[in-house]
Image 1 (cartoon, rainbow, N blue to C red):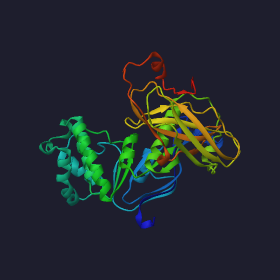
Image 2 (cartoon, one colour; image 1 turned 180 degrees about the vertical axis):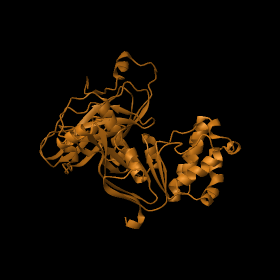
Image 3 (cartoon, rainbow, N blue to C red; image 1 turned 135 degrees about the vertical axis):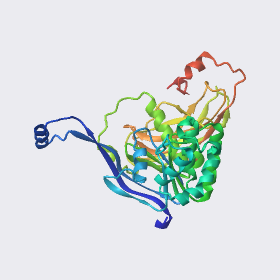
Image 4 (cartoon, one colour; image 1 turned 30 degrees about the horizontal axis):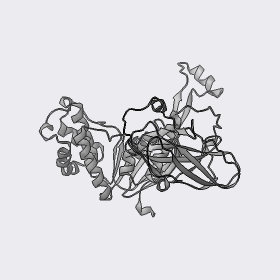
Length: 405
């Protein structure tokens, strides 16, 4: 991809904030502390050498848990924050919508707020004139535009603020956690708008925790963890990695002491050709067992195992299985493992397998490609009443090889 086709380029961006650890009102104490090397603050590193590119026409998703650095990155892209290191290059007019209603004045009318917000986004009065009718029509607030904003309901304010952002004629649109705005009818309208924008060739950057939206709208995505890029590329792969990380982190695990410097070290290729295939029929009853075969090649002698879960394709909820299988692989070379499981606590479900190869420190060495992930169908049982044993299974554990994990 040439430089002319890049809308946003993030190069080695780092950002930290100084958090005070003590407060002193004495100049003498402050000077003594300075000579002793006591700064009175600590540095919280939010972003650590972030690099990726957003191409023109991309619908690009940014994922990550709360506190991972997503919003800080958006504010750097929007030139609200300045990075300590690195730089961001923007090619095109950028419209940033970090928080709903920021810059709106409740004492002004809806019309006045549209023009004021447009000016804050960098548009001239003439440019806002050209966009005004589209903004009002999308918000469905024509009869209220001459009323003060403080008389609007919260839903009306949200619709107006969101409409200003998405109808502004910018080349690059940045949206931070705004897909749940408005009522159901307004959300359907937003969905139609996003589908149209995907075809328009304009660039959109979306931060969200909605994995369904990532898979539906985005053509590329990035996952940020602890201020670093963890996964970049296919949105389904990135979304599944995020879902898997969340299911693993929400389950009880043994405490593992980690090397603080380890997260900054580049990961060398240690596993190749990780794949999975379904050996049983894809449609089975809840009490019947599905059988999978995993294969991968280990390039370095070390203890490895397969961690896995299943994603419900209808709800996008991850169902957690134990973070390891009984079989551990250590020797260099190609290996094949078979796995059996059943789902007695489901009446009906469509489930996709998500799996990784990990070492004994739970570090991910390989991720099962999206296109190779088997999909299975658990058929509805005739009796909707679940047995007591099935209710016990609903804790999230899977039955495997005749015993509970």
